[in-house]
Image (cartoon, rainbow, N blue to C red; front, side, top):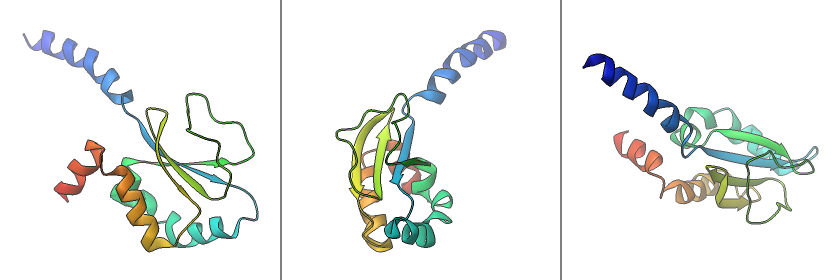
Length: 124
């Protein structure tokens, strides 16, 4: 019985580990003053927050090709542009950096429908 349960867990775990992968894509470019301000105010604390644990940051040069498996509603034009993707598909974006108070509020609104964010937020 224990062996069957263990085998069943091995079949289930890999599927759940890749399902619904959420990321925060930051489109940036060299010389972007607002990107530098975000880096100064947010980047060091972002991975330590619930938002950062729910949607780990992936930086992308705005002039480079999109990584495979990413589908956006439209190509980013401004830097920084923050795009939240769930399983490779855009679910929301913030164009520009409105300052740290607005950034956290806007990001929270994008992440709010995700159970992995609201469940963890409610637990803390």
